[in-house]
Every structure is written in structure tokens, then in C-alpha cells.
Image (tube, rainbow, N blue to C red; front, side, top):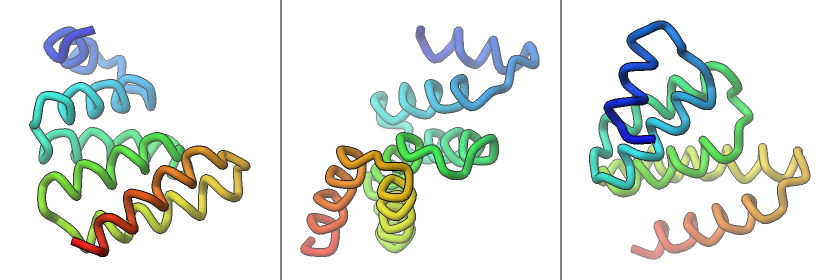
Length: 103
């Protein structure tokens, strides 16, 4: 779905974890990092242990040059992913975190 359709759904009161995650993901791909951050943070209000949203939020913070927030988010995301057995997400965020710290 495109961003406008997702925003229309949101404006019609269809707020949900998946809607906010999808909107954040679409905005991140488009390069609207700050707006993506807003929606990903809202997604995490529905489930603060949704590792996919944490991974994208870390990426959005990194792209928005909010390095410290990106580092904190990736660290939390790694812990959450490990606790849930989501080994792939934990590995990806560990790589992203190492790259971010090196830069």
C-alpha cells in the first residue's frame, strides 16, 4: 500500500501496530526519517517488544543522524530479539550496531 492509503486508514481510526509499522517502513524507504520515527514509536506503544519495529526505528534514527538514539534502540532490539528467540533479527541489529559505533 502507498503512504497516502495508510494515512487515510489511520485518519479513519484504524490505528494498529501493523498499520503504524507499515507506515513507518514506507516513510523510511521514502527518506522521511523523522516521520518514520514518529510512526515506529507509535507502533512500539502497541507492543514495545516488536523486534522488527525496533530494528527499523534504529535504522531511522541512524539515517536521521540521531546516533545515540539509534545505538540505544539497537541495544534494546537485540535484547528483545534474543529473549524472543528471533536470532536473525538479533544478528542483523548487532551488525548495524557495530557499523554505527565504528562510524
